[in-house]
Image (cartoon, rainbow, N blue to C red; front, side, top):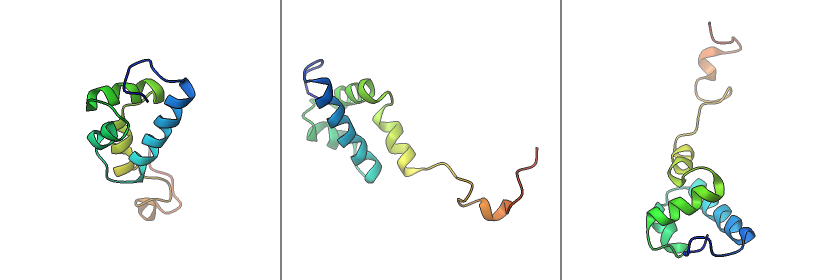
Amino acid sequence: MPAVAGAGAPAERASEAQAALARLQQGPTTIRELATEFGYGSEAAFSHAFKRVTGVPPGAVRHRSEHPAPTADGPVSHILGDRPPAT
Protein backbone atom coordinates (compact mmCIF):
# COMPACT_ATOMS: atom_id res chain seq x y z
CA MET A 1 0.00 0.00 0.00
CA PRO A 2 1.96 2.95 -1.26
CA ALA A 3 1.87 6.40 0.29
CA VAL A 4 0.64 7.96 -2.95
CA ALA A 5 -2.95 7.02 -3.69
CA GLY A 6 -3.20 4.88 -6.79
CA ALA A 7 0.57 4.28 -7.02
CA GLY A 8 2.15 0.84 -6.99
CA ALA A 9 1.17 -2.38 -8.68
CA PRO A 10 -1.99 -4.15 -7.49
CA ALA A 11 0.08 -7.16 -6.43
CA GLU A 12 2.32 -4.91 -4.33
CA ARG A 13 -0.69 -3.27 -2.65
CA ALA A 14 -2.24 -6.67 -1.95
CA SER A 15 1.04 -7.98 -0.51
CA GLU A 16 1.41 -5.00 1.80
CA ALA A 17 -2.24 -5.27 2.85
CA GLN A 18 -1.66 -8.93 3.74
CA ALA A 19 1.38 -7.96 5.82
CA ALA A 20 -0.63 -5.28 7.62
CA LEU A 21 -3.51 -7.71 8.14
CA ALA A 22 -1.14 -10.24 9.71
CA ARG A 23 0.28 -7.58 12.03
CA LEU A 24 -3.21 -6.56 13.14
CA GLN A 25 -4.16 -10.17 13.85
CA GLN A 26 -0.93 -10.97 15.72
CA GLY A 27 -1.55 -8.69 18.61
CA PRO A 28 -1.33 -5.20 19.95
CA THR A 29 -0.39 -2.67 17.32
CA THR A 30 -1.82 0.70 16.47
CA ILE A 31 -3.07 2.03 13.16
CA ARG A 32 -0.53 4.84 13.59
CA GLU A 33 2.34 2.31 13.87
CA LEU A 34 1.20 0.56 10.70
CA ALA A 35 0.74 3.85 8.84
CA THR A 36 4.30 4.83 9.71
CA GLU A 37 5.72 1.39 8.91
CA PHE A 38 4.12 1.34 5.46
CA GLY A 39 5.04 4.93 4.65
CA TYR A 40 1.71 6.73 5.00
CA GLY A 41 1.52 10.32 6.16
CA SER A 42 -1.54 9.73 8.32
CA GLU A 43 -3.68 7.07 9.92
CA ALA A 44 -6.58 8.15 7.70
CA ALA A 45 -4.59 7.62 4.50
CA PHE A 46 -3.48 4.18 5.66
CA SER A 47 -7.00 3.22 6.76
CA HIS A 48 -8.47 4.31 3.42
CA ALA A 49 -5.91 2.33 1.42
CA PHE A 50 -6.26 -0.73 3.67
CA LYS A 51 -10.04 -0.72 3.28
CA ARG A 52 -9.79 -0.21 -0.48
CA VAL A 53 -7.63 -3.34 -0.80
CA THR A 54 -9.18 -5.62 1.85
CA GLY A 55 -12.78 -4.42 1.96
CA VAL A 56 -12.74 -3.83 5.72
CA PRO A 57 -11.24 -1.06 7.84
CA PRO A 58 -8.13 -1.93 9.88
CA GLY A 59 -9.89 -1.03 13.13
CA ALA A 60 -12.50 -3.75 12.52
CA VAL A 61 -9.76 -6.33 11.95
CA ARG A 62 -8.00 -5.28 15.13
CA HIS A 63 -11.26 -5.39 17.11
CA ARG A 64 -12.07 -8.92 15.86
CA SER A 65 -8.60 -10.16 16.77
CA GLU A 66 -8.93 -8.70 20.28
CA HIS A 67 -12.54 -9.89 20.76
CA PRO A 68 -13.15 -13.10 18.80
CA ALA A 69 -16.72 -14.34 18.50
CA PRO A 70 -17.57 -17.35 20.66
CA THR A 71 -17.57 -20.70 18.88
CA ALA A 72 -19.44 -23.96 19.51
CA ASP A 73 -16.45 -25.25 21.46
CA GLY A 74 -15.67 -21.85 22.96
CA PRO A 75 -16.19 -20.41 26.42
CA VAL A 76 -19.97 -20.99 26.62
CA SER A 77 -20.06 -24.54 25.22
CA HIS A 78 -19.79 -26.03 28.71
CA ILE A 79 -23.06 -24.29 29.61
CA LEU A 80 -25.00 -25.74 26.69
CA GLY A 81 -23.35 -29.14 26.66
CA ASP A 82 -24.58 -31.10 23.66
CA ARG A 83 -27.96 -29.39 23.64
CA PRO A 84 -28.77 -26.79 21.02
CA PRO A 85 -29.90 -23.40 22.33
CA ALA A 86 -33.61 -23.12 23.14
CA THR A 87 -35.75 -21.33 20.58
